[in-house]
Length: 328
Image (tube, rainbow, N blue to C red; front, side, top):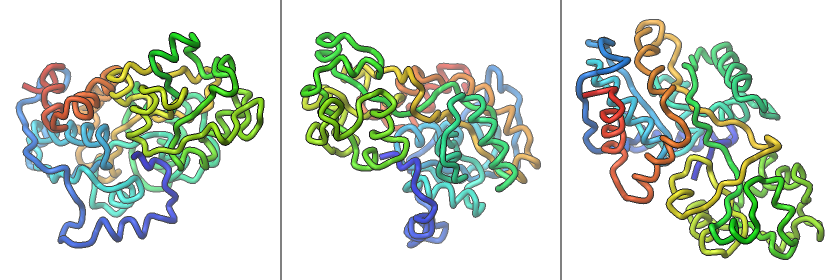
């Protein structure tokens, strides 16, 4: 689902697909995106006579964030080209580097590891943001505005029944589960990533392939969406999840704390092309209050409204901005 770390070697092929078949070349989440009048901390921000293109990747959280950006910019008086729902991280990144997309939300870990080709994440999320911000500005003239508190990273989740049975809340406590019952539902990609299953298990003292760790026969490979349901139904004790996914709460799963900080940080930031922000510095003023409000709890609830309740992302984005006093 969230190809956060596609190698840039795939970029050309992916973008070629994304750009084919229409004049502008990029898709959109479609539908009418509302606009109103800016209010609260962003009241008075003016972008009349300006025009922008806003992109996003093609999974729920990204479309939600992209729609929020479209609504705020339109409500500030700008003309907005809605290019949300671009298929894949690599295509979305290439579109922004090429100038087709001028603003988009991005994750620190994704940029640091995949786009900027660093081998290891930085454990401290503030230091990770600063390093990513500085490198992307220096190398690509992309400006990272202040990040959100939300951190959409990986972890393992267990069902309510397993939580009660084993009484664990942290990844370091997985070793309390008897080896035969240490079963995992994961994506195929997760088993091969340097920051994926193998490294996580070694960090937590249960090496993959070891009888005293995790026998390979204990692994079940599934599609991302199926993992949540399979974990809730007890088909596996541990399921790979994303920490801001609304299905965690909806299915009464417990996301285990990464108490040895193995997984990278994935705080989101609004990323703007440098020449665009230089011409319209009000963009920073427009997005900083929203970024500060987007906690894991907030975005998980919004994701659930789309993935669990079946609501339209543009409507969820509009309702949230109204309820929080950003627009009226």
